[in-house]
Image 1 (spheres, helix red, strand yellow):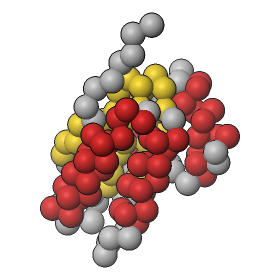
Image 2 (cartoon, rainbow, N blue to C red; image 1 turned 45 degrees about the horizontal axis):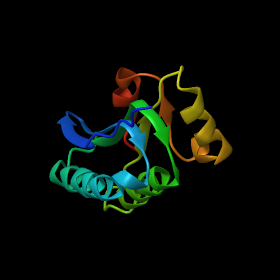
Image 3 (cartoon, rainbow, N blue to C red; image 1 turned 90 degrees about the vertical axis):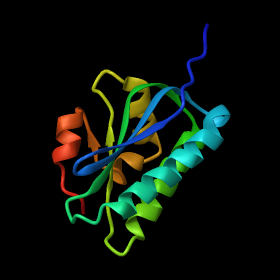
Image 4 (cartoon, one colour; image 1 turned 60 degrees about the horizontal axis):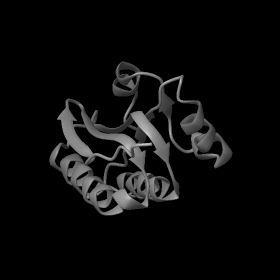
Length: 127
């Protein structure tokens, strides 16, 4: 079985900072993911529009471990601690049963707003 790891990407799609993750998000991705979280927070600070929000696209993630959850929680915490607190929204497609189950088992589905599509997540309120 081939492991699929790619570098996380951070982009601006007004009014959202979008962090996109793909493949297997585990300890092997910890340093690139930490840098991507830092980049997302810097981009968030650069856009002071009150509608700006953070969206994490997990639709192409096949595996997510505690390392990935740790970085998502750090992103959530630091975005909430900004002078203008911002929610971090997740995109998890309905057919990603394993990823959805992980958020349910850890009760993180009560912490993160979870959306099925990018359009739904990007239209969600920032706070």
